[in-house]
Length: 176
Image 1 (cartoon, rainbow, N blue to C red):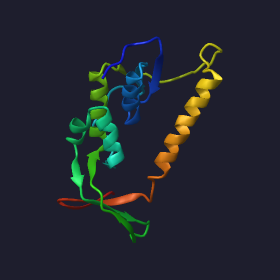
Image 2: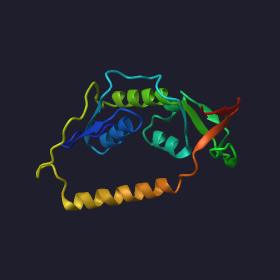
Image 3: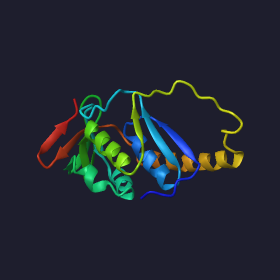
């Protein structure tokens, strides 16, 4: 969903998981975003696995990219939380999507590019200069602070111990 372009622009530094997602949301808000990545090229085999929880899947659904992204993963039937000694602390009996991090990055990057977001590799942020003309107004800063605070509060309510093992329909899979 592309909104009409405005004179508002954003530079996003980093083309990991968050960069392309943020760029697509900014695009929906009418802000032209470009994503800079310091690496010279994508590394779609990078990283290990992660679980995409229902709130993450909901974000993908909002962007209309859920099916293509979760197609790179496999559903799990539960997550087992263990402490550093291997003692089971809890079980989350919720379906999540187990994905290789690099494949998630690839799917998100490709979705952003398809939606018209430029992604440029080999570019690093070296300097930022804030001038009076680029500084947001006090009202804008207050609104942004309130949104960020409510977002962090919502995220904090879903956090728990680190998941070190998950169960897939094919049996347990433990992170190394």
